[in-house]
Length: 130
Image (cartoon, rainbow, N blue to C red; front, top):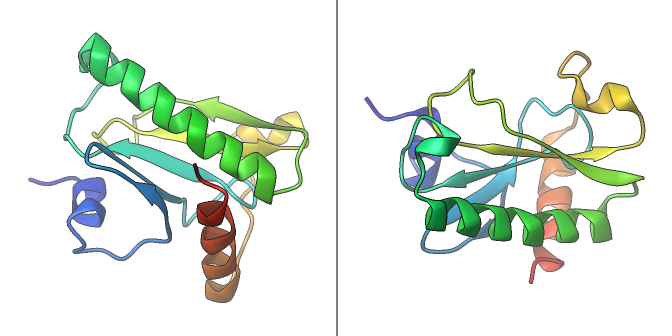
């Protein structure tokens, strides 16, 4: 059965896309820890991060780096944190979270954004992606 991320990749489920290439996609988390919380996902459905080949892992980190730089240019924050947990969805994904306090990365408190907020944010980050 396809993961929710595979359904986003194939367009079965809509998303607020930030960036995409032949191997990866980045989109806003719809239940964000902080404004700008983004998920970076390989298009290849793999359950565990370290089941990726070394080359795929390096490419994922490079793509994530570029997305993080775009987030930094768009969302005021002290830094962009990264977390790779992967228990909630059996598909490798990197959380990139704008941080202003340690609590921002704890997956406890969430921020609420309107659809218009998500659209503006995804367009802003996307415009800074290189």
